[in-house]
Length: 150
Image (cartoon, rainbow, N blue to C red; front, side, top):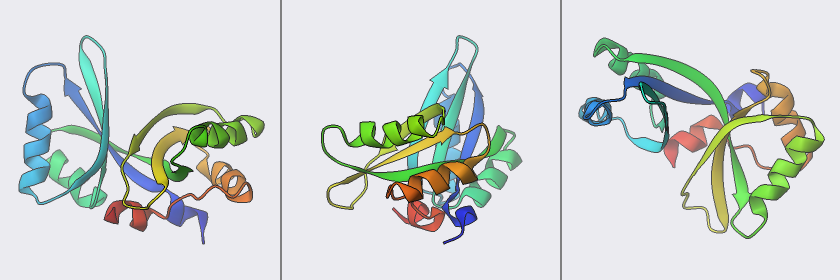
C-alpha cells in the first residue's frame, strides 16, 4: 500500500483560551454531522490547539473555516499498538532506533480486540521514512480510510 494512503489528516483548530470555545467547535462540526474519532488539546495561558481526527476531515476543515475558526491540516500517523504492558514502548523503541523524534501523540479506543491506536506526529515533516521504518518493523500503520471509519 502506498505511503500516502497511510497519512491520516488531522484538523488543528487554534482557540482563544476562554470559556465556550471548545463547545463552539464541537457544536459546529456536530451540526454538520461530522463525527469526532479522537482529539487532544494543548494549551497555553492565551490560546489552545485542538487537534481532531474526524470521519470527514476535508469537510470539517471547510466547515470550520466558513464559521471563522483558524484551522489547519496536518498529516499524522495512526499505528496499532498491542494493548498490553510495554506495547507502546516497543513502537517507540523502533522510532528511536531510526532516530525519529515524536513531536506529540495521543491515543483513542478502537473496536479491534487486543489493539490500541496511537496517533503521533514526528519525523520533521517527512513521514514517509517513518512509515517505511514502522512497516519494516512489523508495526501496523493504519490506512487513513480505516482510521476515519473507527
